[in-house]
Image (cartoon, rainbow, N blue to C red; front, side, top):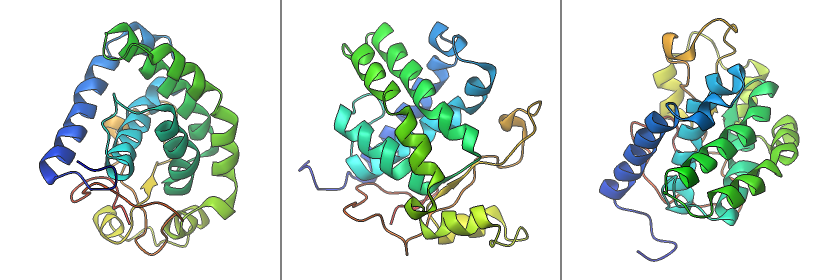
Length: 209
């Protein structure tokens, strides 16, 4: 596959399945246990989103990104497309760093420790980018301002957008027990300059522009 060619539907699905497989392994690892309670709660959402962005925009699976791909996804796509409370963005780098160390420990990467350190250095950039409305896509701006009617179903939002929305759940509620806690949003009308999605997003949490 050429660098700018989108993966086939089959390969795209395989990359997302690989993300699901690795999340299941990660949540049973010592690296996962080393996270704070809040970070563990957010971990699956973070890794799913990063995996989908990597597949759609970079054409690589979650266990094969380089530092440039991680920079792009973490500091540009994630802040622009994911709607969440501020604390969530502070969890992105620690969770992803723990995941990369898990990949290293399991032998899936031999540079996982170095990539983890690199991602940890991005934490402030991620938080700052996510806090600046100038970086938000249209759909995220609507979600964060409350302009999207709460009566609209998650399926209708997903069909018309491609950004991801994280519900502000109470601390004692596991997001896996909530109804559609990760359903989202992002908009085909608000592309990020210089980005071209490489993957297919039908039926997934976001719709790449």
